[in-house]
Amino acid sequence: MPRIRKAIPGVDPKLLIRDAAKLMPDPSRRLFLRGAASLGALTMLTGCDIVDSDAAEGVLRKISTFNDRVQGLLFNPNKLAPTYPESAITRPFPFNAYYAEDEAPEVDGKEYKLEVGGLVDTKEPWTLDQLYALPQESQITRHVCVEGWSAIGKWSGVRLSEFLKRIGADTRAKYVWFGCAEGYSNTIDMATALHPQTQLSFKFADEILPRKYGFPMKCRMPTKLGFKNPKHIIALYVQNNDAGGYWENQGYNWFSGL
Ligand SMILES: Nc1nc2c(c(=O)[nH]1)N[C@H]1C(S)=C(S)[C@@H](COP(=O)(O)O)O[C@H]1N2
Ligand SMILES: [Mo]
Image (cartoon, rainbow, N blue to C red; front, side, top):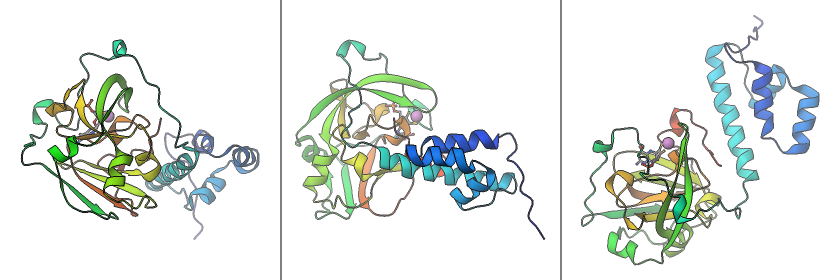
């Protein structure tokens, strides 16, 4: 029986295709838009047939994966996110999580040990004192949340690249995965992990990271949307498999770069 190709309800396929094409490198984008911007081409691009609304979600996910790949290629590992003066800091700084503020996990700093694993030479866990002894720097950068707000804050800590060096991480690996105290998690690409502004942060606004902002440690990366910045980190793995993350697994764009 021939399969009938239907449009995705509520989605204009032309716009969908143009949107996906926006992230293609320039010459191939022009060729693609001039040539075969059709559902057929989209099918070729994503490798699956848009037959009904069930398929649509899968297609969108594939486009997102495609975008992640292209964005990853376009990501300039040396491009810095803007920084701001102290006077630009947003006060009070917003709290956000998938739960209410008073439900933020209470991590005991004295008992805390950061679990380190995967493709690293040294898998010894790190106490907070050991982490605090690492060379630190501060950044005043903008945090952008996918929910439609942004705010400028000051974070201090050690560069993730420096920490990865100390644990003898294989930086040819593709990903760094973070596990958090309350079950949140996410995975970032190695280029972002090595970016000079990607920081394991111990302080917010010059004070020990308050509970709501991720005590005892978060990973700050101003080149990524807020949800890619894990708070309350208790585990860090260097690995080649993409373990996704809390929001990524619910369909949020994995790359989510700024
Ligand atoms: N452990 C953990 N980290 C998390 C989240 C969370 O729910 N749990 N939410 C993310 C989202 S969506 C945002 S916008 C920021 C909010 O950080 P803030 O509370 O410091 O503003 O944390 C991110 N990191
Ligand atoms: Mo967010």
